[in-house]
Image 1 (tube, helix red, strand yellow):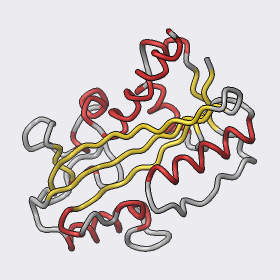
Image 2 (image 1 turned 90 degrees about the vertical axis):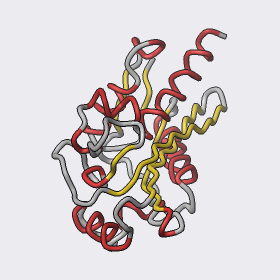
Image 3 (image 1 turned 30 degrees about the horizontal axis):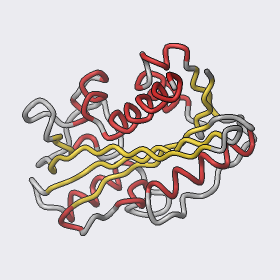
Length: 198
C-alpha cells in the first residue's frame, strides 16, 4: 500500500515511515510530493484545518490516498499560543532558535505546555476523509538542553518521559512512544488496520 505524505521534506517522510512501522504498514510505503507540486499555505485556524487542506491538495494532484500533518505547541500561560503559529511565532521567517527564545521569555519556568498534532487522511477514490489527533503534555525547562530534537524540543519536559529529560535529549524510540506525532500516527495506523480487516 502506498501513501503520499503531503510534504517535500525527506526527514519527515523517514520519521513517518518509522512511526508507521509494523501492522498494516509492514507493506506501507510513504512517499513525498513531487517537487513541482505546491501545497496551500497554512492559513487555517486549527491544526486539523491545515492538515486537511494539505492532504486534500496532495490527493487531488495524485489521485491517490494521501495524508498530511500539522502540529505545534500550546502554552497555558499564553492562552494556547503560539498554536498554529508555532513555526512563525517570532516572525514569518523566524528560525527555530528565535521561536524558542520568544517562548522562553514569555512562559515561566515550569509553565504547562502541550504539543498537538493533527493528521488528515484523504482517499479520493473511496471518498474517505479522516482526522486523527495526538497530544503530549509537559512543562517548560529552565534552559534548552539536548541536540536530538528540533523546534521547541530542547525546552519541552514531557510529563510521560524520563524524569528531567527534554524531548531533545530522548532517543527516537523514546520520543516516538510519547510524542504528539507518534500518538496521532498510531491512531491513523490502528484505523488503517481496521479498514484493511473489514
